[in-house]
Structure formats: C-alpha cells, structure tokens
Length: 490
Image (cartoon, helix red, strand yellow):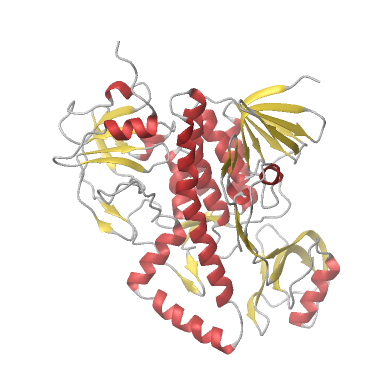
C-alpha cells in the first residue's frame, strides 16, 4: 500500500489539534490531522468556555469574533468558591466566554477548513516508529503515513505519548465525579447542592437536556459509567433519580493529575491533554491546550522550513511545561478545598477572604485567565516574555491594532521611534517591520503600568521577544535566537 507523506501529522482533531493545524497551515506547512470521529460532532457539550488569554489568541488570528458571536461573555475566572472579576484588567477581552466545547470545536473546524489542512477521518494512530529523518505512522484502517514530525494531541490516554516512551508521572485519583446529559421524568431542584460528600448540580441546558454533575461517595473503578450508575448516584444524593432516562452521554472524571516528563522525544511532540491532565476545576484544560498549539506551531514551522535550528523546539517545553505545572498545582488545591470536613470548610473560608482582597484577586485572576503568563527570556523590561498588549497604532497605512498585525502568524518588529530608524534588516524575509506611533497605555495585567518602549519584537504567538530601550542593544541577537541566522547579503 502506498504511503502518504506530510510534513506534520497531528494525532487528534480536538481543539488543540485543530489550533495547531491552523497555525502550521498559516506558515505554509503541509499538515494532516488523524481523527477517529467521522465528523466534528462531539458527544455532549464537554468543556464550557474560553478564558481571556485564549480569546486574545484567537483575536491574534482574526477569528475571535466567530466565537464571541455564539457565546456569552461573563466573568468566568474563579478559584474555590470565589469569582474573580477581571473587568478592570487592561485587555480588550476582560472577560471569559461561556461556550460549550462542541461549539468551540465546530467553529475551529470551520476556520481550519478554510486552510490547506488534510483530514484523515474515521481512523486512529495505532503505531509510531521514528528514525533520523521522520516518523512512520500506522493507522487503524491499514494505511500508513510518513511525517517529518508527529504531534500527539490525542488526549490523556495518548497512544503517541506511550509509543514515544514518554513517562507520565503524577498523582493517582482520590475522588471521582459523574457528569451526564439526560432527560428526567420529574423536574428536579435546579442548581448546586453541597452535602457531606461534595458538590453536586442539576442544570437545564438551553439545548434541552439536563446536565448532571455528581460527586461520588467513593472513588469509582475504571470503566465507562452506565445509566444505572447515574441513577444510583442520584438516589444517594437526592433520594430519587427523578425518572432519569435517555442519556445523550455519561462520563466520569477524577482528580488524577499527571504531566509528561518531556513534551518532545526527537521527532514526536505532545500538546494539550496528551501532555498534561488534571481536574477540570477552573476550566483551564482546553485553554492551555490552545495556547500549547500557538506556542509550538510557529517554532515547528521554522524548523521544518530550515530557517531555525532543531534546538528551537526545546523552547516549547521550556516555556509550556511550567505553565501546565502551575495549572496542575492550582487544580489540586481546588480539589482539596472541595472536601467537606469542618477543617476544610474553615480553610475554604480563609482562602475566600484572602482571594477576595484586591491584590490576591489580581494575582489569581491573572493566573486563571492566562493573562499573566510570563516566559523566562532573561532579565530586562517587564514586557519581555509577556503577551504584547493589543494597542491602537497609527501607521503610514492608517490605524491598526497590534493583534491585526499577527493575523498571518508572522513575527513583527514594531518600531515606535522615528520612522525608518529601525527595521528587521537581514531578517526581512521572515519578520515584518512596521513603523508606528501609539499613545499606549502601556499596562500589563497584575503588574500595572510599565515604561513605554521605543520598539518591540513580537513573536507569532503574541509574546514579546525583545524590547528597545534607550542605550540598549539592538534586536539582532533576539532575531537570530528566535527566527534563525540572518539571510546572506545580496
């Protein structure tokens, strides 16, 4: 059988895989997704929203409005029992978006469908063998693919991760929850309920069915839950199962918390749940998966094109592994606060009081929303390694927002000094130079006001790689580090 070749194969067509495919396609890379589903249809609604930094990332690609048009903006960041208002944060998107994963995937798939991305549907990756020049990928339908790189976006049970021999250390589960969408013959009491077991909830979705979330009295064994399991759990909490019937889907999640030892093993990389799993408290999993993809995509594209050395891929783990580790920590803390003994309740009250104060509120809201993410690029200006604010600019071609300059996922050297005083020089084939003026304000979430720079080098993921300051060094070192050696003169 003939082997189909692609530059990159992505295992898994969920939000992370779709976002990564879009990033690579924008960079001109031949990319294919292997997805077990025959269509993008998703059983159930699953994850329930986007945090502010994810909305910004989508805005950087010019597609945020597609999601905003179909969701509901709200203050969704929170920790424990405390809602964290970010309406005073310096961002155009100082809110979250309530939008079920089924819609997020559908909209992302629509965007990817406009790009040159190949979809191999109704099959799964079954085998992975890599060598010095690429990866052979065996599919469940008997076909084989050849790729220069394979990225596992295939979830917490990732076959790609296992085949690459990447360890997945962490913490075994101690608690479990049932989640389902069902019909009920008898109208139940709506809303949350707390008892000596934990927190439960019954919500009527706009789409029609009842969403059920139940904390189980004991950690349940592995395996797919049944309608009987759900009925028994409802009776244990409410004294009746309300005539539950016609489940759209039933699932179980636990507080298992694990992170891949490495995000890369030679030509195999991991992103999203394949790289990190944790309880869904705070709704962070889908969001950091999208951000993994945006961090990895441009780097992988540059290595494939030969403009950057293979070592650029090492920065993917260096930057993203700490972000996920922090999420693992805060979700474990939230699970601990959900325990129901009196001492834990007292601790929860203390935490709620502390997080309710303005300083801690800003710090935790910055973390939960993703707006405070800081990649360690060394000492320097506070902007270095952080997200570039989406400022209004005035250019020779007219007014433009910073994020609009990133729609094609290309780096930008933004000169805010005298026009013509700075450009990308020998990197002009890879980096767009823009002369502009702005009145600011130069303000970062959590940190506050920062000095106005004379220039900034913005990576395709929206993070600042270099800041021009009076008497400082030029951008050449940063340009070479992130975008490869300079082009030969002439």
